[in-house]
Image (cartoon, rainbow, N blue to C red; front, side, top):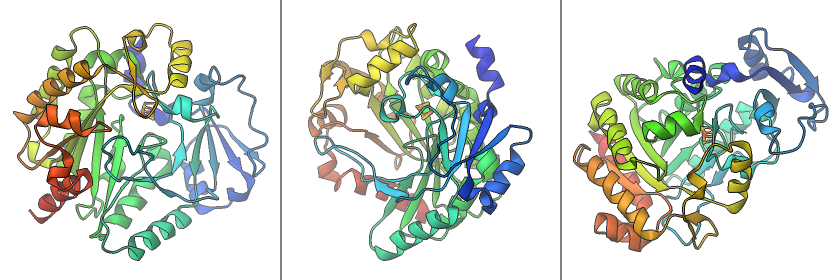
Length: 380
Ligand code: SF4
């Protein structure tokens, strides 16, 4: 059943069944363009404070229904914010570009389930404000290298067929020598990226997992084969790529599963097109476990043994994390290009030392390692 659903859902925007538009952005050209692309999806006009949205019932049960409803509105706050990393772990100094909230796909481990309190999808249509804010930020600090991503509160490309935002962002970034945009996705929706003048300033990134986790725990996402075919297509269009093994989940035959995915990755995609690859073991706040086990009672991975980390999140025991990282690193390292940066997401110096034999500080810090990986590639 899940496989059939996946095959029908190559483009998760098809899951949207109703659109709600706040009245103050109805005449916005971006709104009009989006509505023109949505075909016969019913549209409601609602008040500008989102009053008038249907009652979806109690959260989080309401999420399954809410994910079929897309709210178009203006962002009245800031678009650009530092990634909420924690000071206890090595973090990569990323800037999050907030383009909207929630996602039509449905991963059992998705942190958004605990982070949000509304079940619907929301998307901001004031692209002019977004671009102005970006332009101002990048120009105000010309000596800083900006790594900007849209995949923190949503999936970067899940609604892109409707919104066309990737074209705006890629073309904006193409001549920004002190910046790089990362579009992170679990879809295969890359048609909008074709033929754009990207100037090497956009990295297209995919989250990858073992075949068993993709099949069982990532609903309505593209299959591994579809993700990797889309990645190969982007590489052929000259984009740099990135991959994120996050969350790495302990499950039966995990070694075989992750090895299989890594083999598939390097047989599908040219290694020298990959700027970076991250690894991060499953970590979660207690509230996420409560929500996920309620919504997905057949998923069992939350019932392994965990300890509480310095950031209050549950993690696997250190020995298991190191074992998993070492296994993936060994498989990645024997296939990856020399200048691809392989790194850990939100781990301590001790774990870095055990897995890689060095700490980020010895190489100028993680942010600098990532910037260097891209800088060297950009010159090449
Ligand atoms: S694709 Fe990403 S944002 Fe969407 S449900 Fe999965 S983890 Fe959450």
